[in-house]
Image (cartoon, rainbow, N blue to C red; front, side, top):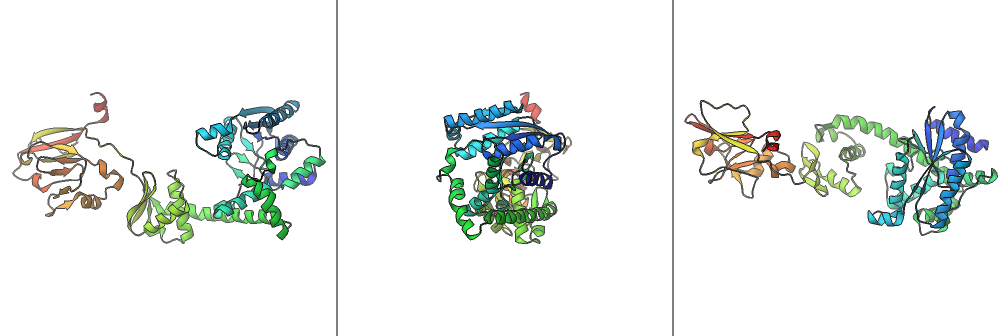
Length: 434
């Protein structure tokens, strides 16, 4: 194998610690020049790195007979060279429509799901320097930040990209010089696809400004990755300081620069499986220092109370009305296991358990005032997302208590109390046996 190409690939593998002795490497092979060079390299370097090599191909069902012939080409090569071979055939266009995804995104997901299903320690894909530059341009055109400017990572989990520092021209020249056969995708000439437009139109124009544009872009991407790695370390340390009890302390958060604050917030919400876009990130930032909430998506909200910023899920919760009531003599009364109690003889009519309603008020015992349940919930710091499921005890006259939080002045236990009305929550196993 050409020393320059071979050495570049080896340098990339060693720089990013891509391989370990004993690895089983699954090479993703489309049949194109990039993936065929990668497969040839892995086979030639198997002894050097003490690895075993397998191949996987996905036939997307998009280009008809041409697509089928690509699969046959890869399978034939693998049989000829005694390479373990795996293939998946899909109907990408129709399947993507069924799940309401773009064909490219659906195909990408299915590919990686398939690769992950094959037993291996590493998955090698043939992304190269030109792919990386195209990704950078595409993201810049659509709007991106530092993370997006890092483009395609050389290593992501078990996925490795040994050709990431070789250009498409270098790869094709090498294949031609060394008689490595490969398939050509006829759709590569169609500029209707964004990547093809970038490859065929945009990059050549930029090379008029700088003939070495791809290498200049590689240096930029490398710098961005170094900067991103450093910032990530700072964010990791800051996040561990700022995040407490599943909330972000605003006092500690606001000590940091806005660049770190943004990343802490992004990391915090990503831990709940939520990716904040720029619009929602700015909405969350505007919450800081205020009392309020901001919808992120559906029932998911960011909630702020001047001291803390947190995630809240306002998905409707069913109220648990599973209580049993008891009336005890004052001499029999024991607080153990009781969720609510009051003077039984001061109750008017029948007790009902319900959730809060508009206009509800309560006079908390011993406070000498009447307040809305909203104010009481604020005072008790009851999370907003569970307020509609808090159990309220009421008689024919009105609210007699908020179970677990307070009793109304009207029915409080006093020195004259003879009988105690108690509510005890039923254990879940009792409910299952009913």
